Image (cartoon, rainbow, N blue to C red):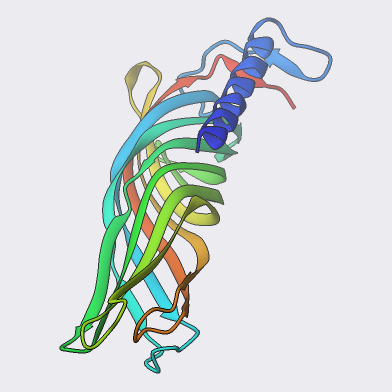
Length: 252
């Protein structure tokens, strides 16, 4: 996780560095300085967001060692919070740009089933640090920016599967887990409006998919070795507050 956090910080610092170069007076490559325009969406912005996430985590027994071909599904949820950095260009009513996030994705939960005096299984998903890098495309109408957004989303996630044999088993519990940064994609949209003093407020929805992780629980007692595929996807609804440094612009 530290490597991903460092890379994200370097990327954010790089954007700020280029912006400062633009503010310093421009270069032959096309960086120019513009006076602030309270009616323009163009320029650099930085802010924070907070909201909630809920989703689906499904573990499927693809090995079938229990002869049940188990499928365990549940709905993890949690809080989302973090920082946002982005840049907009504007042509007439059309606004397009790039936006990145770094923060906490609190997607967590446990689900499973129980067969009396025989067998039970459960799976757990827990996510924390996340980053995203997305494009944005929108239209300004009556002072509101209506936009769609999509791109990359990754999260540091732990998934685990536990199986228990409750009757005549030499090794009653077996388990497997995987912890790592999972790369996925996201797609959504939002609505943003200007406030006074260079501030904007937005509400945004994102769907994200973190793909599939493969786990294998070892054999033990009356439980055979099982291979599980754990799929995770989710939804985010969040509110954001940004400050526009629209005196910093890249000419084109």
